[in-house]
Length: 145
Image 1 (cartoon, rainbow, N blue to C red):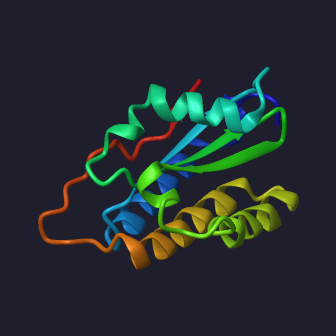
Image 2: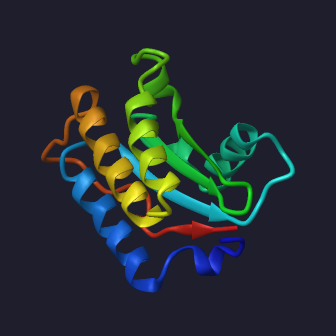
């Protein structure tokens, strides 16, 4: 799996987009997935860069979450915005990461992303529940770099 285009099929990508939609039905949090082949930067630094490029820091409640995957590097980062980081513990994303890693190790990238997204939505719901006036502030489509 070295090419972003080969990482997921079009059908798998649509299943992931649907998982984002489902996860966001429970929370005002905004979840995005970004895939790229590799990064020369530290993966967390690159995730922060992408977070800003996608304007995820502009959500009203500062509750955007990016799942960044560098395919060839076999690494990923879950990056939450300031509104999340200000109120959750430092290990907030650990269970989500563990779920994803278990699937990734067996080569099941689609299910790893789906289960991670759904878990992120459940975790975000505790602090950022969905409300009647909630709007989808960010695209649910997978971005690629």
